[in-house]
Structures are given as C-alpha cells and as structure tokens.
Image 1 (cartoon, helix red, strand yellow):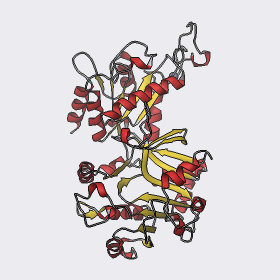
Image 2 (image 1 turned 120 degrees about the vertical axis):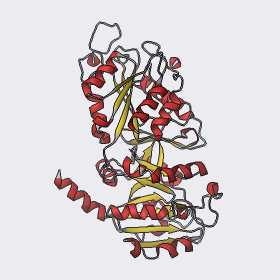
Image 3 (image 1 turned 60 degrees about the vertical axis):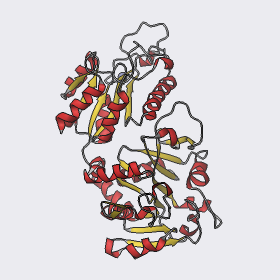
Image 4 (image 1 turned 90 degrees about the horizontal axis):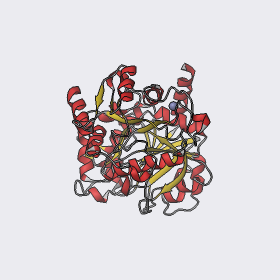
Length: 429
Ligand SMILES: [Zn+2]
C-alpha cells in the first residue's frame, strides 16, 4: 500500500498541467465584461487562481497557461508563477485556435508522457491521484472526468462501459433515454495525442481529438461525484460562490469521508407497480425531482440500492434494466436532479420460474437486506456509514438499515420522499 502511494507521488511530479484560459465566456459577460472567463472573480479571487492553488497543493507545479483573449490580464496577474508557488509557461495564441489548436505548440513544450488538460473556467477539488491511477491502469490515450449534471438535456453525453467510452452525443444530437454523464472539463492525455494536430489552425478538442479515439478503444471516462462546476450562467456562478463559502468543493473531495442517502427504487423513486418489467410502466412518484435536487444541493450523495429479481426471473435482460435506469435518469435530469450512482442486485434465491436464469438464482449477499451493495458504495466513495441513512418503502429496506446500523426513513401514504429528505436535512443541520 505504502509503496503505491510513493509511486503515485513520483508520477504526479512528472505531469504537466495545461490550463485552457483563452475562453471568452460570452454567456456570463453580464457579470464581468472586461476580463477573460478564467479571471472572473469568486469571493474576490479569480477562477484560475483557485485552480493554480489546487495544483500547487497537489505537487503539480509545472503549469502551462494557454492564453488568447485579453491575455495581458492573465500574464500580469500570474507572471512566472513564483508568487503562487508554481512555474508557469505561457502559450500565447495570436488568433483563436479552438480548444485544441494549442496542441501544435504544446508538442514542443510538454516533455512528460502524460499531461493534465483542464478548462480554465471551472471550480473543482478532486482526488487527482485516483484519476491518474485510473488513467494508467486502463492504459488510456485519454481519460475524461465525467459526472452527472443538472442539465443533461442540453449537454453532450458520454456513454461508457467499465470506463471505456463507446458513444458520445453532442449537445445537438437527438436523445431519448440516457445515463446522465457529461464531460466535467478535466482530462488526462498521453503526449502522443498531441500528434493529432499537425498544422496551425482551429481544432476542437471534443470533435477533432477525443471523439476520434472512441473507435480505437482508447478513450476512457473516469466517473466521479466530486465537485467540478462551470459557471456557464449567472445562476450557476452565484451557486458556485455559495458553495465555496460553504467549503463544499473540499468536502466533496473523495479524500474526505462522504455521507450518503441510500435510496430504494420501486415505490420510493418510481410509482410502485409490482415487478416492473415494461419500461413504459416506469414513472416518477410525486415530488421526487424536488427531493433528489435537495440531496444534490446538500452534502449527501444520492445512491440507489435496488433489488431487481426480474433479471433472475428472465423477465428483464441486463440491457433492458439499464434502459429502465436510463429512463429514470432522463426523467430526473429533465427537472435538474441526478443520482450519483445506481447499484442493483439481479439475483433471486428461489427457483421454479419458467424463464429463469439458473446462474442468477443464488443466495447472494447483495440482495437487500444484504449489505454488499452498500459496502461496495462505501468503498468506492469513501463513505462514512455513521453519517448516512436509508430511505425506502419496504421491510427489506428497513432491515437493510438495521443491518447497517444506520437510520431508516420510510416513504408511505403519509410521508413522501420529499418529506423524508427535508426531515433528514433538518435533523442534521
Ligand atoms: Zn444479489
């Protein structure tokens, strides 16, 4: 274990950080017209300064700023970086080169095998070590940080299986049901990706570089519920200011213990219809969007834990179940709510159904009230169980909570999910 940490620190020092700081930020020019987007101040400190502090605190001191629009404001503020504890090199674009035209220059500047590429207009705090380890483990040419967001319907969507990206829908592409996962603006790339740009001109990072790696099976997505937010609209800008005041970015870093609300699915999130086998029968309960939005804006993770014996019974395939969950995420996303993760048990202990799938007819530890799925979430997200709780509508949920020794809140005809979430958040504040 110790050895790994050491190796990790060594790797981190070898990685350059490229920050794309040339963006104009037209949509929030109402807040501040005279500075580049990355120099917009939050609580009196420019976005870029938050980023540079983060990298310095993580031993990433070799920083390359790609500047263009109003670049003097940036250069005059940071100079060579010494005052901020880092070394800064500038790539100055004489004309707009899109988000990847700078690769033409970076080829001669980046010496190491990998580099981080970060949008200059986001506030974030993540366990960068975990991202780097993922990238190395997968032997990816490029790894993108992905996360759910509050407006997936007008965002580009990234589809991945076991981390490997197989589809990427643009903002404009039609979509029906989908997993709410979008590019968060932090990437790690192998140096050789820079060779994809051979001429000086406009290149788009998504379209001309990253998407082209999908058919090569070399583009990976590192999914994280950590705090990564852009300030694309005034509303989001003021939200980020609030979040910084409340220390939310730091608290959401997976280095720190997280807390979670474990949500049952059928009857708690969607209307109870018995065994749900037809996607058309899936609809949300009343107030569920508002309830989950409240969780999203709190310091709890929203994690679904559900028994789906319909898979073992042969009534729903894994693919169909996934599509049902896509519908759940899509409906929630229309209202601005999202789930941080979904865990399900496909097993069932009793055999004797005509279409059943023998290998799933087992006594497992993941079927609620079994605790295995929660244990997996606890491990993955560094959750402190003693600060977490369960919301459900069934005896199995109640027993799950009791097996975990954490509080249980029941959704019933008297109290819906929104009532219960409000109760939890009020109790803890
Ligand atoms: Zn199971």
